[in-house]
Length: 115
Length: 113
Image (cartoon, rainbow over the protein chains, first blue to last red):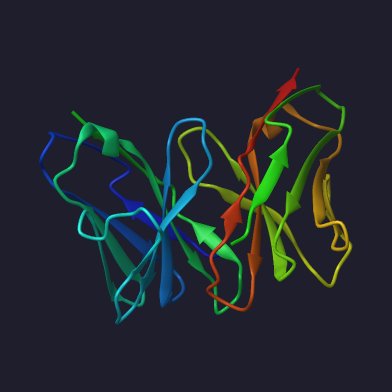
């Protein structure tokens, strides 16, 4: 199956700093990628849809100026958490659909801890 | 928008028994229903999916059924093994490619050896 990677897998940062998370589709091209946030023992909540060559689409309640998304190429999307605070600590997961289908492949996730 | 409800939230079964997880969805336009398995600290892995033109699909010990009229779909795991222990999410999606997926709340399955 298709492979999606994320980097880093874990990051610990101080409050007020910014953190960048990368999501890559390794063996296929993805014009669209999705970013999710998952709090402990909860489901995945869609944050935004990342579109190659255009602006991301954010879900209601997600601050676009705080969670910056850049879909730089057909295989790379980045999520930058700006001015991170402890409440931003979460598990961030990206996914990419394969070839215009509904089938989404998920990355391994990034555990963000903000001190 | 779509709303997916999933139950039970936790499920414990003896090794070798069957496990059933049920979901309902609200949007009649949904036509793709994947199931994901998530192990601790990892991303979700697609284990099986079903489309609206099919009523049942099976892959070894895993099967999924879909009742479009009732907007129900279920995951059945037979002959459970300890390595089946994980959180399982159902999901629903509509339209063509690149449509976002709405997840259920998840079911934590524990298979007791």
